[in-house]
Structure formats: C-alpha cells, structure tokens
Image (cartoon, rainbow over all chains, first blue to last red):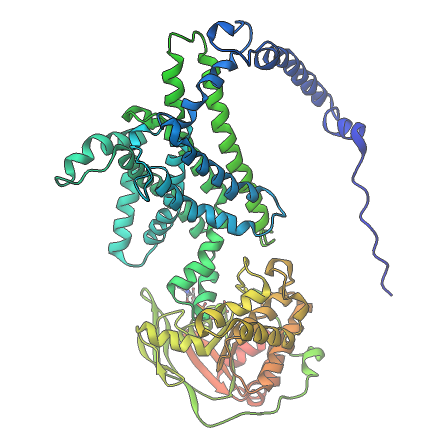
Length: 361
Length: 269
Ligand SMILES: Nc1ncnc2c1ncn2[C@@H]1O[C@H](COP(=O)(O)OP(=O)(O)OP(=O)(O)O)[C@@H](O)[C@H]1O
Ligand SMILES: [Mg+2]
C-alpha cells in the first residue's frame, strides 16, 4: 500500500551555483555585488597593511615602531596594566586563576557535545563568583589583602559586568513579577522602583553612588567606591531587566496560567515551572541585548575614578614616552569588548536553538 | 464557532452504550443558588445542581450562555459571588488551602489543550504529580506512561507538544489531568478546536474514561457523545439552567421551548 520513503532531494548545488543564485541573479544584484566587491578590495588592502604587514610587533620601546603600520608593541608592553590595573605583580596569580575558571566554566557552553556542560555553567554562576569574592580582594585565609582601589583594567571591567549581569537577572525577574502582582502595595513599589531607576542615566547613578550615597549612610558605615558603583549598576540594570522580562511574561497566554492552576500548582510553582521558563526563553535576545549594553556601559565608571580597561588604556596613550598610539589603544579596547560581546551573542543564539521546542509555528 | 454535530455520525453512535461500573448515591458536587457577575454583567443567575459520584453530565447551550463560566467556577478558575459550591465535601471560598484541595481532585481539559510547550509530553504529565501530589519520580513516570498508554500515544512521550497533531495534543491533555488521579473531570468543549477526523480519537478516549466510572462534566456540542455516555444533559441559556433531563428524554421529548429551538438549530445541518 504505502510508498517507500525517499531521501530528500539534494540541495547542494556547488560553488558556482551558489554564486550565480546569490550574487548574480538579477541585474541590480550584479551591480550591488560589483560595488560591494570594489569597496572591499579598495579598503581591505590598506587595512591589512596597517594591521599586519607594516605593523610592529616586537621591540623594546616607542623608537622601535616604524611609523608606517600599527604599533602593537605598545599593547604588548603595557598589557599587564591593561589587564590587572594596579594589582600587585606578585599576587596576579589570583586573578589568573579567576580568568582560568571563567574559561573552564564558559568555554564548554560553546561546545555542543561537551559532557555535563550544564554543571560547568552552574559552577560559573555560583562557585565562580564565590571563589572570586574570596580570592581577588584577599584578606581571608592568610591571603594578603588588595584594596579595590588597586584593581583595574580588563579584570575590573569583567568584575563590574559579571556582578551586574549575575545580580540583575534575578532582581529584575522579581521586579517584573512584582509589577504584575495582584497586591497593590507590591505592584506600586515595583512600578516606582522601575520607573525611577530607568529614568536616570547611568552616569547620574554612578555620581550619586560615589558622591551622594555616603551622605545618606549612617556614620561608620562606608562601602568602598567599587562596591557603591556595583550596587548602583546592579539596581539600574535590574530596572531594565525587569521590563525585558515583563515583556516575556505578557506574551504567555492566559491558558498556560489556567492549565497550571487547574492542576493545583500554587503561585510560586506555577511561576517557576510553567511561566518563567517560557517567558525567559522568549526574551533571550532582549536579555542578552541588555547584558551586552551593560558590558559596554561599565566603561562609564571612568568618571568616578575607577580604571576599567578603557580607563587604563586611555591613561596610557597620553604617556609622553609613547607617541601616536591612540588608534592602537582604542582598537585594542574595541577588540576586547567585541570578543566578549560577540561571545555572549553567539551563546544566546545557541541557547535559543536548544530551547526551541517547535511550538512557534 | 463551528458546532460539530456527530449525532448522525455512525462512527460515534456505533460505540456500545457504556455500562455503569461505579455509582454511589453520594453527592460529590453541590451547586446551590450560585450567581456570578463579570463587573455588572450577570453571567450566571442562580444555578442549582447536584452531581453524584460517577455521574456523567453533558452541558450544552448557545454560545455565550455561560457554560464555560459555570464549569470554571467548579475549580475556581472563576470566582462566584453568591451561593455555594461544595466539591467533594470542601466548600469553595476565598481560602487558598481549600481551593488547592479541590483542584487536586478536579482535572480539567480545555478547548485549546493548554499543554506546556516547553516540556515534553512525559514532563507535562509528571509535573503536577511531582510538585503537587509529591509522588516519587519513578512512580510519577510509571503513572504517566500508564495514562499515555490509555490515551493511545505512549510512543509520543518524548516529543514536545508542538510536534503533535491537535487530536494527539488533546489526548495528552486528558492524560495530564488524569495523572493527578482526580475524582472529577471537567471538559470545556474538548473537541471544538479539532478537525473532524481528530474528533473521534478524542471522543473515544472520553467514552472509555466514562466507562471507568469517572465523574465527568462535559461542555460539548457532540450530541452523539451525549447520547452514548451522559446520565443527564443540561441545557443552559442566558446564565440559567433551563432544562435537565436524561439524554433519551432530552433529545426526543424536550420540555422547554428554548431547548427545542436549540436542538432544532444544531440538528438541522
Ligand atoms: N472575562 C470576562 N469578562 C467579561 N465578560 C466575560 C468574560 N468571560 C466571559 N464573559 C461573558 O460571559 C458570557 C458567558 O461566557 P462563557 O464563556 O461562559 O460562554 P459559553 O457558554 O462558554 O460560550 P461558548 O459556547 O461560546 O464557549 C458571555 O456573554 C461572555 O461574553
Ligand atoms: Mg465556552
């Protein structure tokens, strides 16, 4: 009766077929292709020259730079400062351990078939910050203390972003749930919190955290500047996150709540098992978008005197010993940010694909 | 909304009349002078109904007559404002504890299935037993497979709802509700979102369930189903119960003019 099943027809049409289909299918496609090719060819040559062919990679000082290409030597010479800030050389192994653990926790997330990669991720969200909290400031278990005023560079950028990201998602989720609560007091408080924090620019938040907050705190209570910045960034970010998550919550059909209620699930189980998993999955692009912009916004701590990677680079390019390395410095910073932000973006795409259960028709 | 009518459909009429297997005279649901308003709109106007354990009730009536609202009051998906609803000895009030107790014993199947799309079929079925009934995982899995078997889709256990047909999804929804081992099952037009060829597979499952002695209240326009399994058919119109009668009497000899008119309408085409 039934026909035998056949293999699907071959989609593969070879390089020439692809080129013809995608680049030269119509006359305006041909024009576009030629214009684009012209632009790429004319700009790629000089760029390649500057970045690699005529660039200086080795040497001791500014005089070794030829002057034609990029002076990457400068980055190499100051790399230690760009990464660790003023963290004492002899104790930098502590930061290195954290970089290592960061890689251990998150590199597996990009490898589809890595065994138990979920547990690596969970470690990254729980154990890793805990270890960092002990290891980086020190002062425990005989570890020498390093004041947070000496932290800087990439390490500081990562700390700011990591803490902000880690804390903002749960706080934002709670705020979003609160904003949809039936209880008027809770709802009111959440609305006020979100609307106040969201309406204030981050620069203002940071200024307030560093200058005004101490005025309000009782005598004897004093957080370090970094701590104050972290609290400010986290609360500010939570307000944004709350609105992203709320978007997801609103997209969940009423029937889902009803089905969960009818099965006897109470508010927290309904929320935790049925609503949030779907709502958060829906807004992964929005969440990651917020993370990425937070990551870049951390550079604003410069104005309250913290030296993140941008601050560290900026303070060095004005060094009279190095002339004309401004471009190299900024390109380096841009590259560092790009690596992390692109990583987050790729990861979110991975996650979306994995969590897609085919219910979006 | 299309009102499917399988009264003349030989497929569903052919199914043998269901034997009563479990029937006590104990009242399991008691609704007394129940009123509900949506804002100022009086949706339900003093409903009275006693359902005995093991009884199968079919509710029909024109669109907007309050059928869904009525059965949703029984598990407190909607709140009633006056009168009494007592389910399995527990009165439904604002008390969250009592509502939870009732919901454990009352399963519900919706028109649009409302499966959880982020969970597999098996996980859908195990969720409430694990988190509400707190049964051990192994037992929950075994129960889930047993009911999936009963609704004839054990092979779909590891798929996601989005990968199933409508009829299959509705059968999963029935299995999911049954996994809580409820005493009462509510159905709100379980077949009206389905294509005709899928209606039968769902009705077959419901007929089988009726045969097992489950107390059932079904809102449906499947008159063939009503004739086969119902102990009583209720006709609702404009928030009132207009007529209650055994199916033979209801279909052949309706007392009220409104019932006659309704039956004429849906049996015409
Ligand atoms: N949330 C609501 N707010 C206000 N009015 C509502 C609400 N839900 C339902 N109604 C109204 O209550 C009445 C009864 O609705 P209900 O859904 O119970 O009807 P039904 O008998 O189930 O109809 P159908 O056969 O179309 O499903 C309708 O007039 C409807 O417009
Ligand atoms: Mg309805």
